Each structure stands twice: as C-alpha cells, then as structure tokens.
Amino acid sequence: MNEAFEVLKKELPGLQKNVLLKDHTTFKIGGPAEYFFIAKKKEDVERAIRVAQKLTLPLFIFGGGSNLLVSDAGQKGLVVRMQSGAKTFALLPGNCIRAYAGVSLSDVVLFSIKKSLGGLEWAGGLPGTFGGAIRGNAGAFGGEVKDSIISVQAFDDHFTLRNFTNAQCKFSYRSSIFKEKGWTIISATVALKKGNKKELRSVVDSRINYRKEKHPLEYPSAGSVFKNVDVKKIPTEFKSTFLDKIKKDPFPIVPAAWFIIGAGLTGAKIGQAQISNKHSNYIVNLGGAKAQDVLQLIQLVKDTVKKKYGIELEQEIQYLK
Image 1: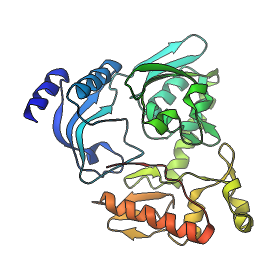
Image 2: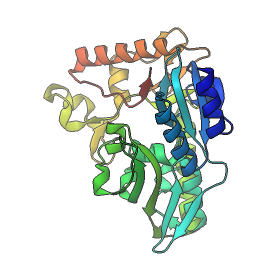
Image 3: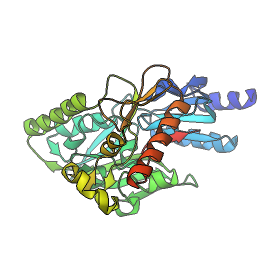
C-alpha cells in the first residue's frame, strides 16, 4: 500500500498514516485510521472522494465525532474529518446564513447571534459540527435543525454533488435522508428571523448552563445514546408510570433516561464504560474504555428495557467498525 500512500499524499497535502481515531471523537475511543485527512473546505472533500475512488479505497467521512463510536480495531482505507479553521460563513439576503458542514454548530449559533438572528438559540451548547447536526436532525428544548433549513448541498451515493430542499432532506426524529443513506453533507443554508441580540444571547447561555448542570460533561461521551421514546410507542400498561415525565421534543416523548433508570441500570459499568450517574442516557468513558465495553452496555440496556417495558430503544450513536 506504499504506492497508494504516495498517490494520496500527492493529492491530499497533510495526509497522515495510522492516526488514532480516539483523538478525533468526543468518546475518546477508537483505533487507527489507515489513512487520515482533514478537509477544511468543499474542494478538499471532493479531492478526497476522487482519489479514494481512483484507488478503490474504503472511505469514511465525518465531522466533530460527537455522535460516533469507533471500533478498537480502527478503520481501513481513507478517513476524512471535515473541520474548519477559517469560519466559513456567508450572510445572505433574507436573514439567511450559509455555512460549511465542517464548521462547529456552536460557531454557527454564535454567528447568528452576532447578526441578531434568531432560530438556532435552542442549540446553545450542543457539540459537533453543523453538518452532523443536519444529518441527525439535532434537536433540544422543542427546536430542531429542520425548522430552519432552506437547502443542503451533499454528495449522494454516486458521489454526485446535489442540492436538496428541506422536503428532499426527508427529516424525521433525529434522522434525515443523509443519515439513512450515508450521504455526505458539504454545506447548508438556514433561514432565520431578526431578533434582539441580548435576549438571544441570554437563551443561548441558559441552554449552555443547563447542559453543564444536567449532563456529565466531565467525562468523554458520545452524547445521548438512545433516542427519546414517542409516547405512542409506550405500552398502555406503562403510560401512567411515565405520565409526569412527558416532554414535547418536538412531539410528546418520554426521555430514554427514565426507562434506563426504571430498569435499575444507572451506574452500571463494564470495563471502563459506565452508564452515567448524572444522566442515564449517557455512557461515559471513565478512562481507557473500549468500544466493546460500550457495545455490551448498549445491548444490556436494550435487552433490560425491552424485557421490563416492552420498548425497543433506538440507538442514536453510530458505530464505525
């Protein structure tokens, strides 16, 4: 594969070999990428796709690594991380913002506040990239990414660059066509509304403080492990049990954490992975946790909750093996 490395290095300046992916995910778990490249703009992604196709190499493209569990064995082929040092934003007519997918979501939120534009303040404190948030239709406090999206530019499974309208994105609860099909988002445009900068900043700060107080940010994690549960999917005999736990997010749900608590799994530990005592829908890395530790905990939760409540918890984090 030395020949492949030479070709890759020529086409992708800055390419590295055998880079530990644990250093590029919020979980701090994951073995080496055979070849690793950081794409700072659309053209970098296009070149990476082109050369991977030319060499028939496996290709995986990701953003902030905040919703990702990587195998301890690592990943063969070319792994591309979309990351932006230069904050690539554009303020467009009609109170719209266009941004590169590799920009952090928090930077997009702060840019919108700077321009006195409201519509993304609910996302204050959310980790990951703008593209990752769109891919998983991130949401919190009743807001969702889909509420603001005007258009998305992405590569489909033929690596053809296409523009998608909001409807074509097929957004659903914590998902989209991009997540379902594994397509790569390059950039997107959101439509926002004029607001009061001070009030918007106050909302963002309150969301950040809430996360600091309620979430186990002192340990590495991949955020929420399971999707919250649609009230309609809770068996009739258990609905009264969780009646006071119903939230609107954006439709009536019961947070997955309550089923994990009810199953008596809070604090459960396998290896150095633990179901957080602070937030039961988080699995945290206490230091040196392996992917297999996390996978076994995930399966334990699924099996126990299914047995006790008859509910199939849906996994939110992606496993790269």
